[in-house]
Length: 419
Image (cartoon, rainbow, N blue to C red; front, side, top):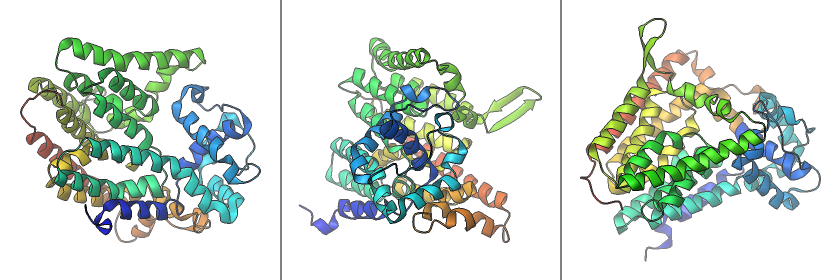
């Protein structure tokens, strides 16, 4: 048994507990502001999508947690705003002004409240780590995986300092991945639920069906276990008066996929670079004809790395790739050096989002930074053009990510049974 001071869990948990009360971005405030309307006022709010929150699982998850911890938050409504359901996610409500009012309302208790609001994310990550370690064989691989998960700077920054909730659908997706060999029906349901919460699992679903089953009948069964829950979700949304297809295709993620393009013949003929790469990967996976969980992990990681390289993305979306990279790093520690380069590039890429991921995160320590502090990229403008800086950062990040995708697929094992 290893000595306790050599275990990454100790340092990882301590780091998370220290970061949880220190920072928050507008998303944490916004999702809980929506959830508090149900937990405190019994109202399902509206927004520009109409009654979408009535069928959206994350709304109920955040509302249920608030209801559970409500006795710990003191009397009254700590959010303190009037109930305006039609403006639930209006930018005003999750902008600097709203955060300033929120922290002023909480006063000295804001550190305790922020810690409590992030606790579901910590509990979810504990489940994620348990799921991944439980499926890893070999002492050396388990040790590498454990260190990668517990001391990962991307997780610590986006989940525990920023307070982004992507950890929840990511864990559901990983649960589906691990259920795939023995319980394909439940695995498909997990993937569908993850896609209902966030759109990214949709990118990987064709690979799940193609690589997650060995026979045509099994693929049909797996595909049905994914598609039928999604259709049920669409029908339920329609019954609440929400135009679900318009909502789905109106998400900004689709615009991200088509951002990088080559214009061949104006005004309409163009090539979308990510879609070209995506179809190539899909054909490559079909050509290999392999049904294995490791194969699905490799292609899934390659697809997401291609997305980060050939599309505009919000920095927290990089977290979707982390569990897949963790599995691969456990198998091949040489990928760890490339991941370190990715983290450096991602850190520079984050600066283009202004104070959202930088100075505003420190508002719990000093609420005045919400209105007065300058973003780091603004300070650099006197030295280097911000567009040049961000462009170089993203270009280097993209080059490293594409090379990592190549390394991952080049090391693809020979076809084997689903495991």
